Image (cartoon, rainbow, N blue to C red; front, side, top):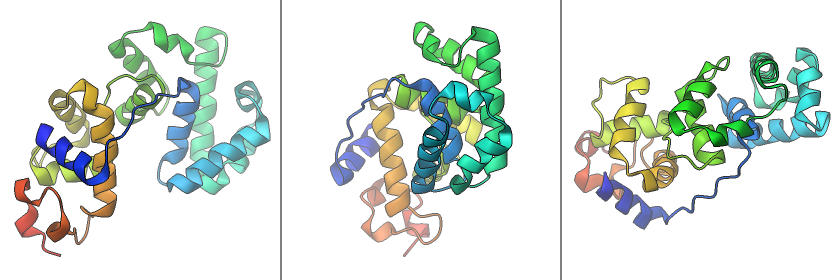
Length: 215
């Protein structure tokens, strides 16, 4: 694991970890990022904020108005319902719409709370904890999952839910952010789902799958 991270940092450069301290925005961004591009999810978030201006206004709006605002991100009806449900739960339980109270919880408590919210799974919860609160929680997306299996960091038969636990155990806490970001970059640029570029892969000498995936 340490060699993988070292080689990826050599190839793509080190990544600085700067949590933004905005967990509710991070949760909404993550929901909007599902099944769409980074560009479209950012546009959907920007449209949501320019349309409503505050989280309270989003929570008070009809689902169809939320869906219309985020339509550029795709699956807008599903995402609008999820956002509305989450906001309603948070407001009912805490009297306001925000997730700053997560700062006072330990990692496991914060993760458990997020995963009790409607439609929030482990990847989404870990994204909020990693990017917004600076907690060493590893999100496993399709790129991380694919590359980790090819490298033999996890067995090819494990589920993506199991992968969260198994990879979390292997990555040093101080390197969780770097591992996540660099594995995604490597998956997008080199270790493609189809026709991976094994001959130009910085990890090829340590990858048990490289010989079975020629360009």
